[in-house]
Amino acid sequence: MNISFAITSYNEKDRGNYGWIKQCIAAPVKHPLVSEIVITNDSNDEADLRKALDGIPKVRIIQNKVNMGVFGNKVESVAHCTNEWVQMVDSDNVMDASYIDKLEKLQLWDASIIYCPSFARPSFDYSDMIGPM
Image 1 (cartoon, rainbow, N blue to C red):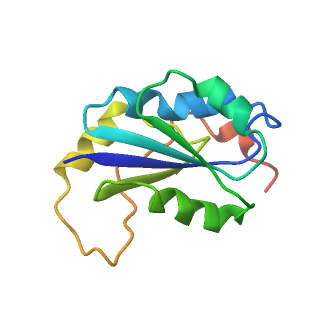
Image 2: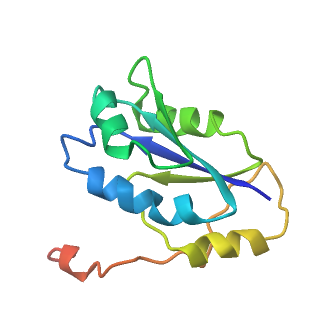
């Protein structure tokens, strides 16, 4: 079993998120089940993104010719993956190796359904982000 990680990227430099995207790929890049990390870039910071991720194994950056929008970029990212199993994430999502290990234990499912695993969990405390109720 090989897993592709499909990651969308948009204006990472403007948002100062190269650190986020590096955290996003930290576990997948080291995991033996992950054979590729496909990042589709929907903005004009391609050169800076390539420089920030230069030399990181398994990473392949695809520059969209036109801005495809959030959903279009997700579809494009998955379309460039070469494995049967694809984990779609945004560039500010972070997961640890135990999440990827659990993917291997999943049974084969109905290919026409998108699944949300119950073992996903936040990696930091969200309480500071809660506003007035």
